[in-house]
Amino acid sequence: DPPICHLMEWHAFLMTLKDKDRMTQLQEVNRYMNAHPYILDIVNWGVADYWETPKEFLDRNGDCEDYAISKFYSMRTLGMDNTNLRIVVLQDMNLQVPHAILVAYLDGKPYVLDNQIPEVVSADIIHHYRPFYSINEKHWWLHRPN
Image 1 (spheres, one colour):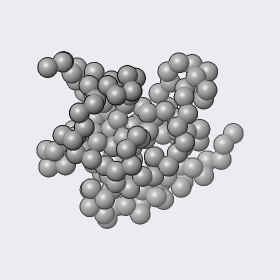
Image 2: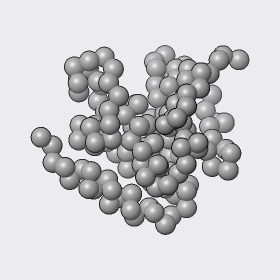
Image 3: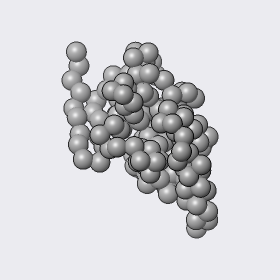
């Protein structure tokens, strides 16, 4: 069994961000989670697709939706309201692969936390993603092509 210290380290990291402004929290959470190695579900779990809990991600690393889930729960732990967070499943039109990211809304403006991008960026500068659906703790949204 992997040591439980990953959860304690994660919690301690989050507590260092408690008094920071929301954008700093987003940037630091994105950086912290993106430091984990990317590993395909088929290699990690022996199945084509597996959505990990944050503990599983911290213990075993993961793929795109696992980064997004762990970032989502990090921001919820820091007090960000569920209504301002979305895990977005989309198509990366450049790479021609499905992908998942976290979108966080600050003052009504969407920001992207992506394991492929080191910085938190405004959603309006990303043009190569076509969203399929979004989810949070209580809702899901189907995105229709324009």
